[in-house]
Amino acid sequence: MDKKTVKGLLQWYHLHKRNLPWRSDKKPYHIWISEIMLQQTRAAVVTDYYLRFIRELPDEAALSEVPDERLMKLWEGLGYYSRARNLKKAAREIMTRHDGHFPETREEILGLSGIGPYTAGAIGSICFGLPTPAVDGNVLRVMTRFTADPSCIDDAETKKHISDELAKIYEKSIPEERGLLTQSLMELGAVVCGPNRKPLCGECPLQKKCLAHQEGRETDFPKRKAKTPPREEERTVLILMSEESDVRVALHKRGDSGLLAGLWEFPNLSGHTEIRDILKKLDGQGMGQITPVMEHPATHVFSHIKWLNQGIYLKVEKCPGHLSEVGDLIWTEVSALEKDYALPSAFRPFLDMLRKLTEEKK
Image (cartoon, rainbow, N blue to C red; front, side, top):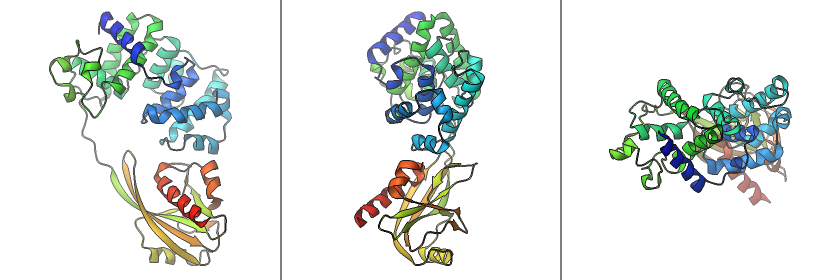
């Protein structure tokens, strides 16, 4: 990519960039939070989460001190909750190891928990003008099409090669342009040279030099490995509701490791269990009379697992603090659940139905 091509790309970005809140300044904290949120999530979805997060946790000090429960609630719905835990861990590292100042070298940025080469490259170039490319899926797609590169972008060698080639371009650019180049490549890959569709080559500032476009092979790139379909797991989700006027619902906290670690969930059992068998399992566990209300299926797909959930709604006379096959329970009003407890997306369909049921009761 020569200087003329880079200049055209930067001019295109200046004219066509989206108005995103994290682009209003170059504060490392803002770029950091936005880049972590944007992993696995579209910008249109991230915007509201980002604004809410920054309002409540405006800097590293606030993030380092936020209670875990509140942090998980702010992150609720974004998924991949380990990202939020690493944000807080890194904020504490900034406060203790860097005297509250975000580090300014690539090596020190990479030393923070949860930050890899891509995020370090984005922060380094955008905030500090460092010659550090940020190579994500968008950039890989743009560059493999631009060069008609048949290498598989899932291979680490391909990412390193593209990063090294871009670094040569960054080295030749002035510091003020490096962050713009990073954002231009990201933007181009997101809105013009997008995934899972034919690229909008007529709107692309690189089209005259793009080898894939010249050969009419845009959709042949990038090359990827065949995905292994997620394995399926059947689960029975118990939505246990008290018979009080202000309905309370049972929650269980998951363990400290594994999928959705440390998050709240509706108590659930492995496999699909018929209501009659559930009633047998719950008999004698301190719930008194149990009345089935309804069933409600919902599927949730993680990156490697698909949960085939069958929700069973049950009214209970009493609210015990423990279930033998689940563990400890707490009971909370639905309004408090929505306000204070982080409930993963896998369980949100059951909360939506629960809300309808409690509104009907009123």
